[in-house]
Image (cartoon, rainbow, N blue to C red; front, top):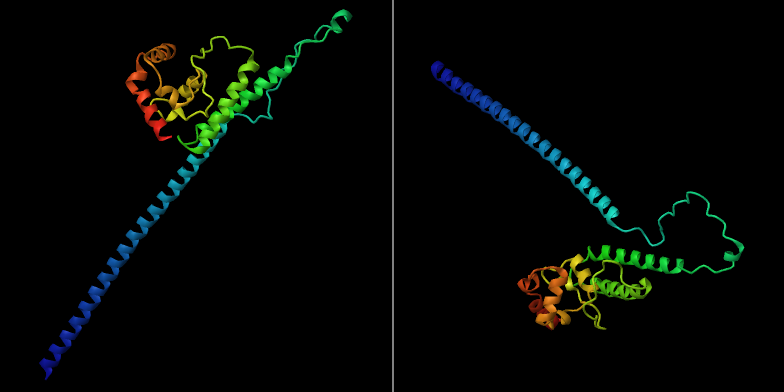
Length: 235
């Protein structure tokens, strides 16, 4: 029985030693894996924090840019510079004469210009074809009509009004490919406010408009008339 017992004891000791060895190896492997995953998690958390910080910084920049681009409210008027020296006192014969009332016309023109700037800032943020954009464009067209008699004539260097604006509400001409906010304003000043006008243009009308805008055939190349007909039919 001695050799058999020694053999059995040897086998048991070998099994225990093997189990202990593999258990230690598995524990070390698990610790290594946990340490690796922990480092990866810390790296991901750091990347998320950096991305959040960059996102917040971008939002703050956009907010500051929008504030800088918005026009000042109507209540704010530019400060009038102080006169360099006191004005001379007019003689008694001249003081009795009433001075021409120029200030009300100037303030009215300034009010209209500020209202148009506010509308243009809102139009730049609205999508083409929206109902809010059409209402703002109608308000701006009304301001343009009211500004014409207040100005007492066209400004030096202003573009002539080639066409008579129709009584209908103005269309969103920016829906025509190739027409942006600036070009839409120029077309309105020329008297072009609806799709129906552009759809009914003759060759002579296109030639006059092309000459005034110095487009060198761009209107025909971009197919404004065809686009206006399709948009007018859908309206």
